[in-house]
Length: 261
Image (cartoon, rainbow, N blue to C red; front, side, top):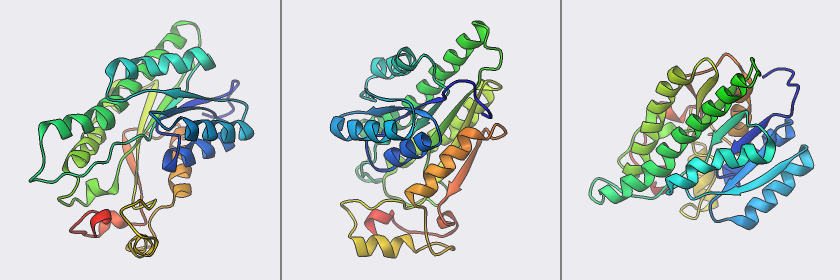
């Protein structure tokens, strides 16, 4: 999106903390106005908005429960109403709850599909309609971009987190279909991190050990992923593909998910 004549605005889902916050701050530092989505972490979202506002001209927070289709469909119009326009969506929010072949059931899969697959598709649909409306209003060169956060485990599967993995595999497939369906006005790109941030399931020492398990001797950092998201949003030639940002972890075979190793 070279030499914009208006402030570019991006909706980043799950931007209150962790990877979503890093993405929001990187984009704000690059001049993007950031709509910070959160579900329940309101104070964290307010902190992210404040940090973004120090870096760029505008930021605001928007809550939505991604298990509620009505709330999902209303989200992008709310952002448009606030900023006047939206140029991009980054689908960073993700449900990540453990199940396996023994514990798998309809309820867990449906919950993951709503949050991790259906919501990004609906937001891409809404962005495409918004861009089409701008074209109809006389903005002939209106363009949009969607970045979906995926996971290197799609190229290096293990039997853990079955519902989560299925939902991300469906999102990867949706990215291809949407790239075809929404062209030429909206591009759709996947970004697939490796092990990036630690969690309550890993000690600091264990995280450092696992992070080093890659051909490059390091997996992705939040800064690596955020920089790739920014690149994908701003490079007008990329659509319908996924950028793996994992130090090559997808080239190695792991028998279990990192959190259970």
